[in-house]
Every structure is written in C-alpha cells, then in structure tokens.
Length: 105
Image (cartoon, rainbow, N blue to C red; front, side):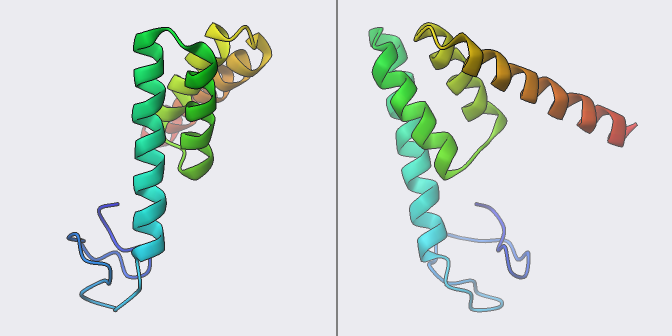
C-alpha cells in the first residue's frame, strides 16, 4: 500500500496516515498476510506441491487481488487439474487487460 485510501497521501511504514490520521493497521496487516500467502504459493510451486500452491494462491487473492496473484492462482488451478477455475481466471485477466487498453487509448 503506497497511498492512504482515505486522503491519498503518500505513506511510510506508520500505522496511521500522517495527513488525515486514518488508522491503517488492519490494512497493513491484511496486505502483509496476502504477501506471505503469495510467497508461500510461489515456494509451493518451486517444490512441486500443487495442492499447497492452490491453497496459498487462493488465500492471497482473497485478501488482496492483483494481476500477479490472479495469474499465480490460474497457474495453481491448472496444475491442480481445476481447469474450469484456471480458464475462468485467465478469461477475467484477459477482459481486464482489454478494458484497460480500451480506456487508455
């Protein structure tokens, strides 16, 4: 998280926004948990543990979705033979990319 969701001020590692005083502790905790699950999913991929990879990729996306995390989840789903989930996520990523391209010209 680089900006305060309340006032859009640039953030440092403080628990409260320096501009508006918003308590960011819970958001920072959630972001940290999402990043931890993302790293665990990548580690599971490296060791070939598709079941663990899928679990951690799902948790990472449930806590905070990013294109990178969705891509990892799609990969984990396909490696776990959950082709419906993998294809649906890939389709969603493609749609998002198309929408972004259309809005930016």
